[in-house]
Image (spheres, rainbow, N blue to C red):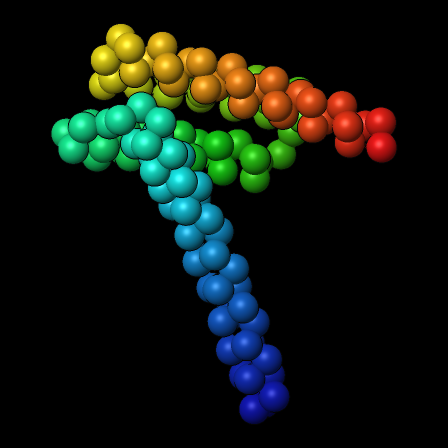
Length: 123
């Protein structure tokens, strides 16, 4: 009986730790995005919390999409839709110049990802 209780306790602690790590990962991802955008776009003190909230929402949606069932194509479409929502929200917060800079960085990142994917496929 004691062994069973000890096993259940250890299993519970492991499950709780995993859930905490996943939640921390979402928060860390949105924090990294906001920190990067703060530097790249010279965000004002007023813009930072708004952008952080938008990134938190996107990170939560992306994590939920990645963890749900389905094929890669459907997940990709859902992520793309969430990303479009994020862009609309950011457009309302950022200045025109900042949003143009954001789109340019996004385009560069997409090109870099394609290059990495090609290298991985070839190598």
